[in-house]
Image (cartoon, rainbow, N blue to C red; front, side):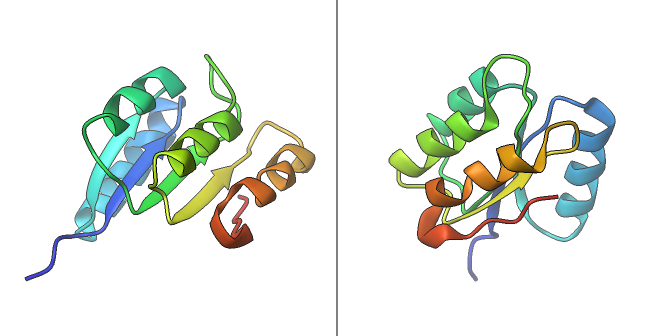
Length: 106
């Protein structure tokens, strides 16, 4: 039996984070959630993730900075950037920072 895919969801909007967590957990994924870059970095000290879904506009730092940290730590083979309240330009700036240039902006 293989381990479930580990996903980190970093979203400061509680209803959005809860929605994502409930649905991803129901689909069988191993889930970590955080509401800030600081909380996400703390979680990453103890866990490796396969996928990171990160809001660009977090209260304590940029989600783009967090993506850089995840990549440097050797995690986050796939990363998704959420940019509801930011310009599309911010999300596009993340493209070179993701492994193999993969970017999904929503």
